[in-house]
Figure 1: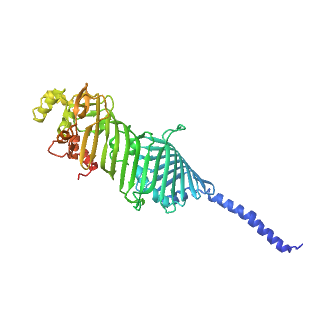
Figure 2 (figure 1 turned 90 degrees about the vertical axis):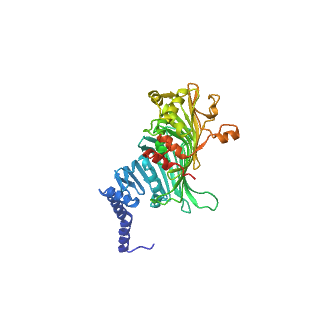
Figure 3 (figure 1 turned 90 degrees about the horizontal axis):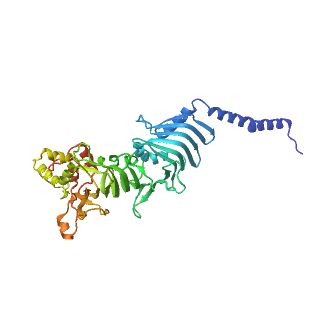
Length: 455
């Protein structure tokens, strides 16, 4: 058998010892030392800050093995902000072709949702992984009302053409039933027709889960005017004017269809106004479309719950600006209104303006577009008086408030047809101003900013 020279054997043994024993031991020791250096945590935070242009702070940062890290908490803050954008607790990540993140709790403010949405694609481009799988055990949305979502699962990925897709589901309870339907949120590129350019489409489907209206406040025009305890059930779709491109300002078109329950009626009328409407109601929106912060079409039904009430000033304002009628059974109110218009009001008339009327029913349909506004009685009610074709409100078993008719259309069709009023009439009614001027108050300006532009 062929035998190596003694010197050769020694060299082979030394080389084998170095390659198989000493080098791996030194590399392992170096890796351990490097991953336990005091500045390792600050270096990782600085690396993440530079990559995503955010101020990142980490606590108890560890890398137990390659491509796997764990940190007790992380705070992400925008460079020009003082309050944190995101607070994360109990983070574990596994890097690979798919980046898997597991988070015990994620805390963010509702007001920061638009900023996070606009930064999504840009941040994904800064990540090496082609696909991200996210599991969050609890999401806490703060201000103005704390809302919690549980067992949030999201997948973010880019297809072969480089187009971003996003799918998310979450439950509203910590222990959902086996057949519970989760909230669904998705983002995908979609073309309106074949050959048309694609737009980013974001769709939210509550699937019969009540979502607090405060969550929609920064995302849906006018939702901030509703009380924080109102809940929404339905579907909302946002369509961008062009593909998402990071920090640039996007133009969005929205479409909402669904129901708001527990709406505080007093929030629908500006507080400085003398006319009052109180109680809770259900707002069912069959059409709600907007572009940026301005509605293009708004239609639906408003039905008050039991216990609703309004005062005489509300009736007078509806009569003056919306052309509504006061029921024939309320002759004192009719006479007081006539004296009020002729500037001959007495102290008794002033008392009638402030007096509240408890309502048996209050229901109306509305349609607001660039053509104006139509306010009509709700046809779904069956407990109305005989003249229910025009009744908006019933008190003490009698018609209290009647919708304004379009006399020409009603005479032609033979049935009650509501009149279409200019949107300015609604502004005057909200502010209870003079019929000859448009109101110039902060509340009126904010309302006018959201109304459809007239043709």
